[in-house]
Length: 268
Image 1 (cartoon, one colour):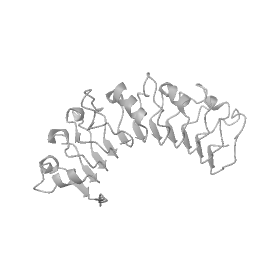
Image 2 (tube, helix red, strand yellow; image 1 turned 30 degrees about the vertical axis):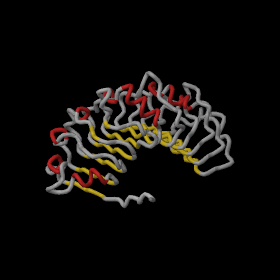
Image 3 (tube, helix red, strand yellow; image 1 turned 60 degrees about the vertical axis):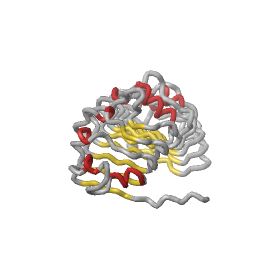
Image 4 (cartoon, rainbow, N blue to C red; image 1 turned 180 degrees about the horizontal axis):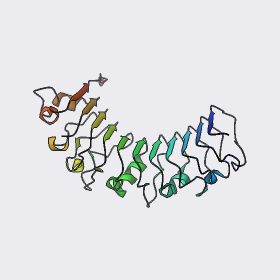
């Protein structure tokens, strides 16, 4: 009985099968680096045991009917380096059992529908997807009341000056235990108001935010057990043990890791 289907590095493959009607025990599908596949077999929505789907580097994959995937049992969906998955994301709020969602390196024009994100998510990762990030901010990240892990990579989000977004009063879900923020080139500060009520937050990782100068207020970081700051030279200096302006905010944290990356010198 087939439970795991892994199709990897098949550059000339255009079709997997006509349908999946006889694969009722299938639990996981991973399709990666299959450049010419354009559509998925019929019957995926009938696979009652299917819980995890990964699409990676399938740039020609465009054909998604709104009912092509199982909306009641799918728990993990990962999409990376796929340019044309707009139709799939259009109906993603119907995936009522979805717990883990990762979208990275897809078309810059792809956004989420007005209906928003699946509210039962416990893990969310967004990378190099500026319109999806904007959709998330406008819809309201605080509405993901079960979210525990959040990772956002802010490439192409050059207008973002604060996290969470201060101008719209954006707040983070109190359920969060881990936050990772990377690659926001113009991020200047962490908004304390957005970190209110994060009494379960244990891990905070900040990477490659060269203009970042400040952290949330100390009262917002009391539950932290692990803090890692990397590639943030201005913030790194201010977090120097015993003498930096931000040190008093983090002195209570059991494990603090500051990683100074060598920044390239600008040519005269």
